[in-house]
Image 1 (cartoon, helix red, strand yellow):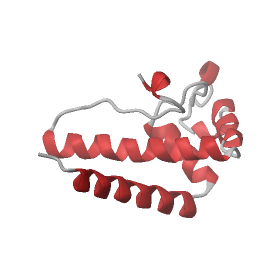
Image 2: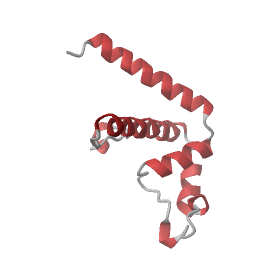
Image 3: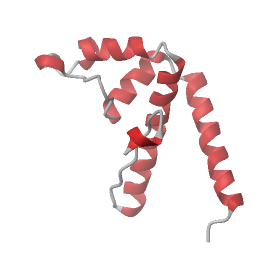
Image 4: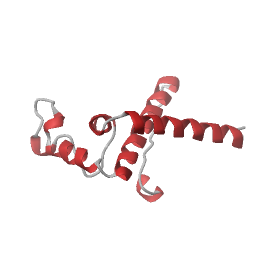
Length: 111
């Protein structure tokens, strides 16, 4: 049975991991990694056939996403999405099951 102590420890570990990523990653690293591993609603890495050569950093969607990360709340969501992607990958590696997980400003938009 999962105890409250265990859940608090998990929450603390995730918070430390989040803080470390926020303090060490540049906006471009956050933008690149979040575009590669997450669906970023409202932004796309290949709008209107751009990036046929695979260089999505030159696309309009990526540049707009990079500019949006100037907002701290948006940056925090992007870093959170990276952590969620790591968690999904760990579940897949350890159990061979895929899972769905997301992050948003509120619980209604995560569903």
